[in-house]
Amino acid sequence: MKKLSRVINLSFLSLLLSAFAVQGLSNVAAAADEVVENVTEEPSPPQPAAEKNTPPAQPAVKQEQNNKDGNEESNTPEPAPEKNKNAVTKDEDGHLPELPVLEKNKKNAKPAAKKTQDKKAATKDENANLPELPALEKDKKIAKPAIKKPQAKKQATAESTPPEPAAEKNKKIAKPAIKKQQDKHSATPPTKARLTQEQAKQAIEKIAADMVAVNGGCFQMGSPEKERGRGMDEQQHQVCVEKFSIGKYEITQQQWQAVMEKNPAHFQGQNLPVENVSWKEVQDFIARLNAKTGKSYRLPTEAQWEYAARAGSTTAFYTGNCINPRQANYDGGEEYGNCGKSLFYNRQTVDAGSYQPNPLGLYDMAGNVWEWTCSAYIQHYDGNETKCSDDVKVLHVLRGGSWSFGAEGLRSANRTRGKADDRSLSVGFRLTGM
Image (cartoon, rainbow, N blue to C red):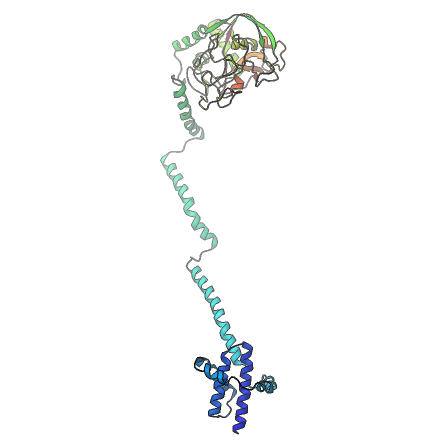
C-alpha cells in the first residue's frame, strides 16, 4: 500500500513537471520536490481532483526557502516522465486538471487587459471633464466671443453717429484729403462761394492782361529719332507760324467761374488751373468769354502750342534734355533717362505760375495739366497741326503732360489726344488771341 501510494504520487509529480515545463518556470521543480518530501514523510491517501489542484499554488510563496532542497532532490531519475508519458496523455481527458497552467495564463493575461481598460478609463475621465455638448454648439461657444466684439464695436459706432446717406459719407471722407493738399499748395480758399461782380470782372480782365505776344517763325516740329520716349506720331518736320499771342498761365478756376458761374474742378482753389473740363465745355467757355469781352479768344493750334513751348529750344524739354520736380509739376517718381527721380512731388495740381517760366515767359508749358488745342489729331502730320477743327466727332490734340504723368509726357514734342466729351482731373487749357 505504501509502495502504491508512492507510485501514484510520482505519477502526479510527473504530470506537474510536464505541465510546468511547457511554461518554462523554474519554481515548478521546487514545488514538486516539496510535494515528494511531504509524501515520503507522511504518506497520505489519494485526494480528489479538486483538492489536488490547490496544493501546487501554495509552494510558490515559499520559493526562496525551498530553493536549496529543490536543488538536492531535483536529480530524480529521468525515466519517470517517459514512463508516465502515456499516463499524462491519457489523463488529459481524465480527472487530472490543467488548471494550474490555465489559471496562471489567466492571471498573467488579466493585468494587461486591466491596464488597457485603465488606460481607456483614464481617457474617459479626462474627456469627462469637458462639457458634453454637441460639436456645433461647442464651436459656437468658442467662436462667439470673436464675433461678438466687432458687433459690439459696430453697435457703439452706430449709436454714437446717426446714419447718413452714402453720398454724404463719401463727401466727408474725401474732403480732408483735398483740404490737406490745398493747404500745402494753395494759399487761396476753395471757390465754392459765388464771386462778386467785381471779382468776376477782375478775373476776366486778367485773361487779357496775361497774354504774351509771340513773334512768328519757322521751327522743327516733332522729335529726332534718337530722343528717349519718342512716339511714332512725332515725325520731325519744318513748320512756320505767324505772330500770335498766348496766355502766360493756364486758365484758373476763378476765371472759369467768372464766366461760367460754376466750378467743375476736383482740386479746389481760386488760382489752381481749372481741370475736369471737356473740349466741348471749353468751346462753350470761349463763346461766353468772347461775348462778354468782344474779343476773339480760342485754343492754340498744335503748331502754335509747340512753338511757344519750345521757345527756341531743340532739346526734349525747354529746360534741356532733363527736367526735375523743382522745375515742373509732374510725377517725379518716374525717371527719364539718367535725369534722376524724386519721391517728393505734389501728386495734384498747383497754383498757376508756381515754377519758373520758359524763355518766352510762359508758365507750366511742361506739367501741371494737359492742355487742349484746337487741332484735330492726325497720327502722321499732314498740315492739320496748323489749323483748328470745330468737328466734335474727331479727336483733338492734348499737349504738355501733367501732375499725374512722368517726365516723358512733358517733352515738348509729346502728343496725346481726347474725345470732345472727355474729362480728366489732369486736363485743362490756356487761350490764344487772334
